Length: 577
Image (cartoon, rainbow, N blue to C red; front, side, top):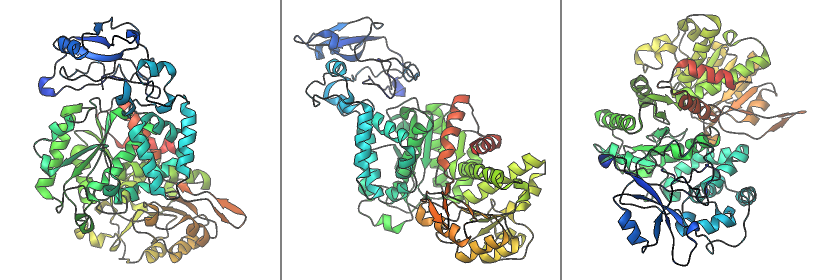
């Protein structure tokens, strides 16, 4: 974005923007002009950007009523560049053959700068809004109150989600003000669990583009596709291929709801400008037959590309991102299937500023929860025995970070600290006798033990103090499993982390009831407080939103070019209480 009025994000009334294709990229001499008319006060004219090559055309467009003014002079409607939003982009070149007028009806249709009824009398005069709005002027605070009241009238969470997305598409400032001021109430709407249902129905509720879609049709032209996005000063990208959306499986192109939701939180919780955030979906097809038969599906109607075809498109994307945005662009991988997630992180972790939120972000927030639990129980992580249900991205990522933290605390070799951690996958307890058939990311967790098929038998055999669910399978922490944990521990720690709520291994009510109120419980999606006996239990939430916005902000502010394990450990340690 190229802005002339040095606007602050939350209070910016208007701005000028333009883009310049790279093959024509050069800085042209520019002048600020005021467009007026014979019966208007020229001091209230709208801002235009002109180049020396196009000044005559501008004068013709304005019927001879354009006049050059000093670029340093104050222009009505501008405010101080408090956040440095404009100085960060004022070197961006301007397309010489296009002009953007920040005024009138078009301003009210621009979600980045529209303020609705919050435009002041002076702003309405300056930007030719007189008569285009009702005469009353109301504050942003009153707008927030009104929107919150309206959203609370909806009984269905998806309707609340759609209302929030509609607000974001017409008044971005009000959207973020509402979300920031009411984050506890609205986080489950714009993020998990509601975003899961939104992705399932994305084709039906899709109205306008919120990010970049890159498909197999764009192979060989990915850089060109990225340059079609109007914002040029991108700092963070969240990208998915939609193959493993939460615990819902392959949703293909409909997975775009996840990058959009994540980046909303980068702004609301991390303070990163919306214009610096880019949601991306890589569409290589879907194996979801229901979507392929859905007339409202918006993605490629073909089976997923695999192997070399998939790898080549992803490599072109990663190369184009660095070429277009530079070395310090942060790329967050989101909801890739296991077989691709680990390979992509290993391949690009040494060449790009990347992290996988499912593997590393989840691990940091769970580590924070466990460190907090230790402060409550006494003792240390090294004293515990861990059992996981689920040995995919989240499970192995959490396990590895726990092992690293124990090694850091005790100076024990990593190979030794891993022996405190056991994993159960779909075939049972991961043991050394299964080593040859295991995927590479499971092999560090294959310990010496006889095979065990059922989770409850694994609990009784391993005798864990901490049980963590990352299976994506709902209600797998049965009554027998929780009761076994409670029989082994005075205060069993049970983390049921799978999202959305329907896929949670158990509910808060089940964990507290079956443990007779003794469990220390946390979940991936929120649960309401639960009364048991004389106590009211408020379930903890191991939500990645506690980690990735701050981690991303730190990476950007520090100018880091790679993500290291020490950063993830520091994030988890600092998030604990």
